[in-house]
Amino acid sequence: MTRTLVFAAAFFLTGCFNGLLIKPTVVDGPLEETLVMDAHHWTCRNKVAIIDINGMIMNARTSGLLGSGENPMALFRERLDAAADDSNVKAVVLRINSPGGAVTASDIMYQEVIHFRRETHKPVVACMMDVAASGAYYIAMGCDRVYAHPSTVTGSIGVIMSLYNATGLFAKLGINSDPIKSGPNKDIGNPGRPMTQEERAILQGMVDNFYGQFVHVVAEGRQMPEDQVRRLADGRVYTGADAKKAGLVDEIGYLEDAIRDAMAQARIKDASIIAYDRGEGYRGSIYSALPRIPSEIKVQFDLPGLTSQGGAAFMYLWEPGLPH
Figure 1: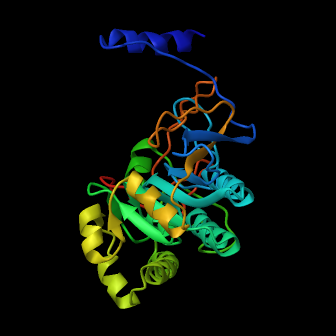
Figure 2 (figure 1 turned 180 degrees about the horizontal axis):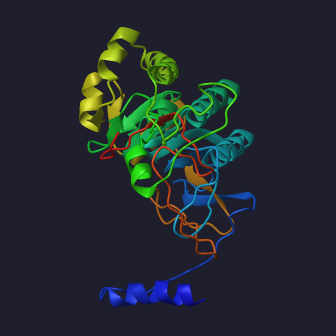
């Protein structure tokens, strides 16, 4: 309780605090349809579903200042299933705002989009918001069409595994790493000692393999030769406008444009715009997102590239400004 009061007092002492509303929401209940915008004609039963891909892409519950959240991969599948089961949903727009994430989670979500399109024959249009980089761009390659805002940051086609050499720090603290292991490579990536050339070759081979998989997915999605993709896929990011020039996205536009394109591909002229949320959902416009504020305050600090359970991971991730 004392820590909660200190946390609240810190806001007041900034001098610009304008009020704090904490409204717990249901995070484990079933998804419910939220009406975002009515169709123009009240007799129209067609729907276009907006499905969000936000934040880090992981097969694990997200965490942060206010505690545990959703598993992004599981939630994505649940929302796609809801859109697939509703015959009135004629098209889907993926609203993407993510720097990417884990290799496997990104690939699974990409495959879910491919499966949805193949089984339902409903068009899926991606709309990139602020960021749709690396693993998020990978997922967009499963869509029929890809829109980016002019100021979207996208690309970052590549793989990274963030490892840290802490031998200098360990020496200062008088700590030695002395694992008991069954083989010379069992503690590969151990931060308590320098990496051997053999270990580096093993990990580089895995990174190259995952990179080749990424290049292949982009080549298929953009109908582009793989050698051309590799010239673009050196890890750099692109603005939406530059991505359009490079052939990495189809159109420069906004969410309304992506919705209109989805309706055109579904051969419908009118539709209600919906989303899927847990518990009581209200969205005042197509740009709204329902906040999830659990009742427990939890502070957790994670190093980039490490999973919440500990250990390094291969990532399709844009992580600017971090030492490597």
